[in-house]
Image 1 (spheres, rainbow, N blue to C red):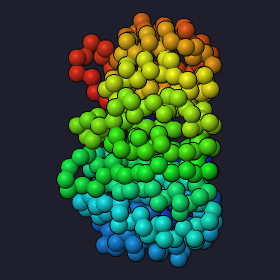
Image 2: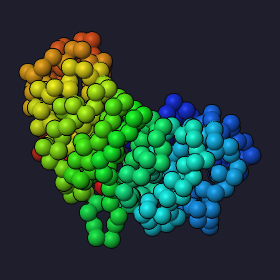
Image 3: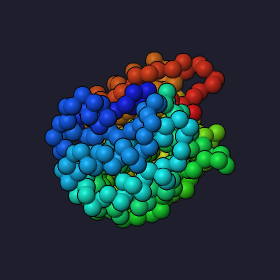
Image 4: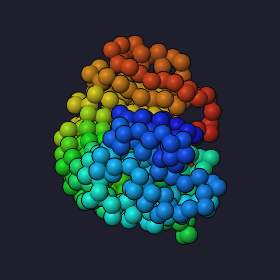
Length: 316
């Protein structure tokens, strides 16, 4: 997963940029694509104008997936201005099943500068939502709006991913306090403290127990300098035996964390183990392959295990 390009597929659908489609005069069927709505650098219109044009041009009642790009033209602005427009149109979007908030590349805005807001109302506005991706949390600066969430219950959500360079502890705890009986896939890019990631190991307990996530089959606790400590917790976590996929990628994962996994509970039942962007020695990489012959282990993106400065894949 990278943030240097816009997503080309979302919720199993190809992504169509609404502005480009209008300019070309080639509009696909409303329900056959994931619509990307976002401003460009040289746009003179405001997001509200673009959003209204989208609602007036396509058949919104058939739209299944939305990808929200830049809602600001130049300097980052809070999502609190654009999100209410989307929520207000919920009644016109009865078929919406997937929403991506913040498909913004690092060239458009560093992930730590994407200003979010409280996204809790999304769950009430779209009770049939099945997939939600949120990129950005905003670093802990006084002039930035940070990501917010309150514990909720949602019956239909199957996939949830938070992408950030530093996920606030309040958000991690709120996710842990949610009731998601249908959630199958959960991924948290935890990030680092310098960019707002003030979560603690204790905050991860609800995900490791899986008590409120009865349908969970894929868990990602990623992008942390503490991947070894997380791996030690995962090695004995009650949720692991029912997982098909586990991701501890994008962080400072070393031989210490890998040894903890190998010495813990069996992982041979997994279909996938994602460890990309790691600091494993070649010997430990081979040990993992040998111990998990039936598991698709992603060991791409190897960094120098002798490097004393170990960084995560996504921070600023």
